[in-house]
Amino acid sequence: MKPDLFQAPDYFQVDDLLTEEHKLVRDSAREWVKKNLSPVIEEYAQKSEFPKFLVKGLAEIGAFGAYIPEEYGGAGMDQISYGLIMQELERGDSGIRSAASVQSSLVMYPIFTYGNETQRKKYLPKLASGEWIGCFGLTEPNHGSNPGGMETKFKDMGDHYLLNGAKMWISNSPIADVAVVWAKNEEGRIHGLLVERGMEGFSTPETHNKWSLRASITGELIFDNVKVPKENLLPNKSGLGAPLGCLDSARYGISWGAIGAAMDCYDTALRYAKERTQFGKPIAQFQLQQKKLAEMITEITKAQIFTWRLGVLKNEGRASSAQISMAKRNNVEMAINIAREARQILGGMGITGDYSIMRHSMNLESVITYEGTHDVHLLITGLDITGLNAFK
Image (tube, rainbow, N blue to C red; front, side, top):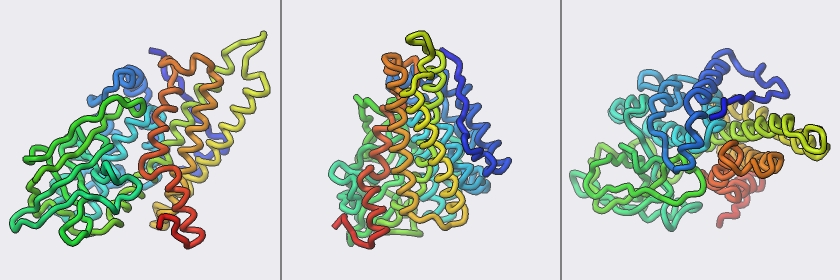
């Protein structure tokens, strides 16, 4: 295994905008990735297996519920610190960032925000420590970009709810101890339910044969007359806005994470271009290669400043859903374009597991689709600036 020589680009001294705490959090996550993730990630991606032994370490660096208050086991950090952790994890691998992002933004966030005190104290400390793994059930076989059309339903049976339906493309589901499941009641109102492993009729079959996010574990959630205790309903918010609020938090983390993937591809391509000699000189000396590299660092720099500003707005409670949507769309597109250009700089070597670029490229093909597709995010911006709804 080659050593992880990654050096983060900072062309406009964006570090000057960060506090000392931000930099300490980021550097701790960066060192953890270099020491623990980089040496094993190619092996686990090649064999399409989630490195579950890393869960404890992810908890220790605050990757689970970074912004959840310490009284519930979280790290009590701000939103920029959370984003920087996601950046460093995705620099290592999108699938590992995805596991942490789901745990934080799609499981711990709704329990903290929409749950009651009993639910917070029961679930959050176990999720923060990595003792429990969570997943988020929204997407269905027939309803992806239109989650409001979901068919998963529950009935009030007096002393419990009876849950039926199915979810798919669920990160962490095959190993999850608890699922935050979104379903409609008998009046058609969407609510969140906490479904625990072991409940009769609840199963989580794994999804196989993925070309993307191979080091992330993906599956389904199947509910066949599952009896859910009434105290497992999230009481503080209902309607489609509840799961969409969780997606805002997750999309925000992705906007940072994509920068990490782009930085890794750029750093790899820059180092290779300086070392690889053709026609008697390093290929970095050729104009077309310099064009590629110059455009990469320009786009990374723009995304760094863009997303730092979003983090400030998020800390102030002023970041809108549309702003988060724009950042997710822009940064993932930036990253996937850089991955493709970086692969070309490496030539044939770029498709091998000796380098991270093709793995990042394949991963980003999923990231550009999940948490809202690339096209849907464009329409969210369109709706925001015109006031006219293209979805209907």
